[in-house]
Length: 363
Ligand code: GLY
Image 1 (tube, rainbow, N blue to C red):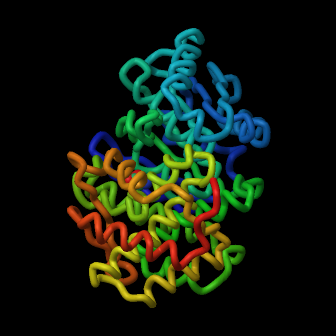
Image 2 (image 1 turned 30 degrees about the vertical axis):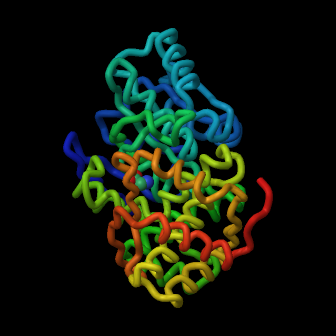
């Protein structure tokens, strides 16, 4: 069972990637966490499907509270974080309590935010249940809630003490979610893991070797986080496809796109931008667009005018004083940062993308 260590400044922690160990999950924790009291934060769907397995495996008699939220991005709010913090105070949790985030990206970000703020920060264990959370969001310590003025703009860096990725949990994952999560794995291929990219390009999604894909993505992410924990430099590259992606999610009020779907469109946009800037070729774009199509990613842009998307991108936390940062591919497997791309070039790249994919459907 591969265990990847993530080296960060406060401590290093294991990411265990395997299959079918949820019922024995306590044994996978670092020894100092095994006898702690836990608060589990999950969503209603995940808890209904997998709660009993986790309860017997991780916390026989040791759960101070089990708190569930309604599935969906709407749970990532200050109001919901406040409700969970209140429940923890009422349950008598203290600084030794360990928060377990048991769910997908939304639960991981929200429970992580709660762990980062409860009594100035308590330990966190991430047990991701979606492919997206396994390959990306559960690793690296980014935790946050959304604000009406932007996605993930209220948050912290709060590294987990351990991440347990049990691939058996993916058996109940709806295929749309699986596909969207796979987009983040492809991202790690496009950022430089050529073997991973080749694997994804050479077979249908149903035939991907998931333990290998998850482990490779986590290894790639761990290497970047070890270099730049707080996104002052190289970690910014993990935002490939996210500048436009977040704007698409926000413009459609988080209802139309799964995160990975918006990132796929954002990545294709980054390729169109790269072509406009003379940094990538048509064949690179075609290769990635074909891969997303084969995977079954729905590629449709909203009717939102580009000037609105531009405005949203300028409010994103990746922008600095309204100056936009784009991660732009240089062929396949290398990316570079671009700031101050003229609005005209940004708009042309968008029109260009729109004309190439089926677009313009109503929200
Ligand atoms: N999802 C990108 C990062 O964690 O930096």
